[in-house]
Length: 107
Length: 119
Image (cartoon, rainbow over all chains, first blue to last red; front, top):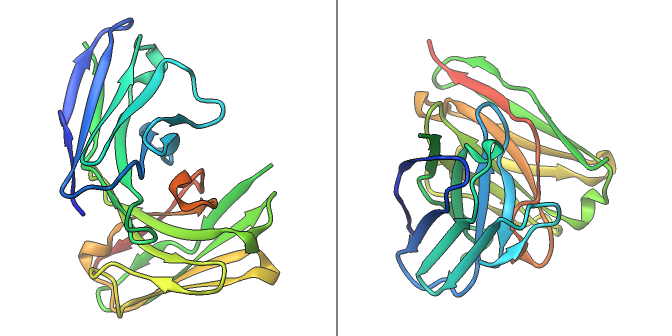
C-alpha cells in the first residue's frame, strides 16, 4: 500500500490553519496514524485510527478521513508545530508504510 | 518512565554485519509488538521489521533474508541482526512500541542509533 502526502512542504505563519493530505493507493478503512518529527528527534504519535488524538496532544491537531483520503489539520499553527509530519497506514499491519512526509516551515 | 534506548550502531563496511539492541523499561515489554523503523539522512521513515508477542516476525522485501529481528523478554530487550549490509542501509534506526489493538500506531520510540555502511 502506497501513501502519497501533499504538499511535500509548505510555508505558513503562526496562527494559520494548516491542512496536510495523505492518499492511500487502496482503501485502508480508518487504519491511519499521523506523526510529528522535529530535527534530530524521534517521531511522535499525534493521531491514530484516522481521527483519535493521542493522549497529551494539543486539541489544535485533528485528523479526518477514511478509505483512501485523509487529512491532518492544525487549526492555529504554533511555533512548536514547525516540523515534518508523516502519515502511516496500519491496514496491512504488521507490514507498515509511511507517507513521504510534509515539512511545515515558517513563512 | 516508559523508555526505549537503542544501542549498537556504528560504522561497518559493505557486506559486513551489525547487531542493534533496544532496551525497554517502564512497561511490560512482553505484552507489546515491537518494530524497527529507519530513516536515511534527509529522507522519510521506512519500516524495517516487526516482531509479535508470540515471536512471529515480519520484514519488507528490502531487508528480508538479510535482517533478523528477535526479542528476549526476560531481558526486556529487542534486537536487530543486520547482515550483508549495503550503503543503502545507512540510516538512523529507531525501535518503537506498538500497543494493542494494532491501529493505535507506534506510541513510544527510542532516540535512535546511527548505522553507517561505508568502505
